[in-house]
Length: 261
Ligand SMILES: NC(=O)c1ccc[n+]([C@@H]2O[C@H](COP(=O)([O-])OP(=O)(O)OC[C@H]3O[C@@H](n4cnc5c(N)ncnc54)[C@H](O)[C@@H]3O)[C@@H](O)[C@H]2O)c1
Image (cartoon, rainbow, N blue to C red; front, top):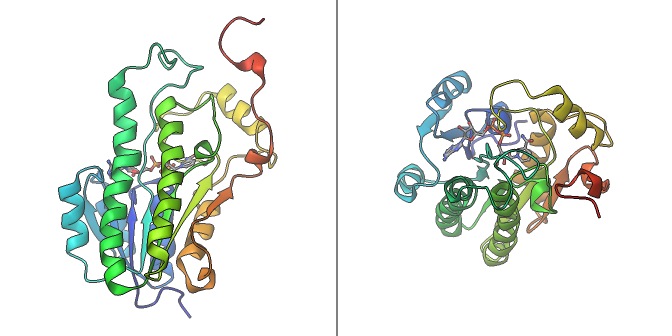
């Protein structure tokens, strides 16, 4: 029996990485999938899955309204679109006194404003239908500081966690659940399509008790569970899937910038 037979799922950021895998998972379980992405390549993924592509910038409220406004019902909304691409405090240009305001805003605009727009539209539909599950892709960088990740990424994901918990309070009484997954380092395009420097890959690996990066499919099973009836009593949660990374103290003071005292 397919888990999502007859259901409608929306996946944002579905053109690549975790979102593409989420869309695959939904389609494999029988859902009609609406794939949202700012990148035209989402059309290919939608064709492959027999889903519907929507080329849309999640941070454009009008465009998001147009996508959700065309849907009669939504059973599961996977609000996953996100960006980084900004240097961390350990990289050139990423320190507090160097980071351009424009870079800060670019990440906040997609990761936070974009989530808000999609959350609002999902809530409008799900409150009306008195059911639904919203699953947001947060990050371990939303649960604690991470000097190897940019300021706006860490700040946006902390805000995402707050938004998920706050929304879960309002929506629970309408039969709508809101949860987040918090992945650790996963092999996707979020850091760009160029191969990552070997030293950086190894340093990250060394901070993961499982001793390797995750694959998108290792993250999406958890998200799919949060959308199906077996998790009916789960809401307002932020669920780690990180190879144990959060259980380990990751960064030594000797690795931080600045003179040693
Ligand atoms: N890869 C990781 O290590 C990791 C870890 C924790 C959390 N995450 C989160 O997972 C989510 C998915 O990222 P990923 O790792 O699969 O990266 P990815 O770059 O492979 O996929 C992100 C997708 O989002 C789309 N996107 C970007 N801006 C958009 C916009 N304005 N409107 C619509 N779509 C937009 C991109 O085109 C891309 O297809 C993000 O929220 C990210 O923060 C990733």
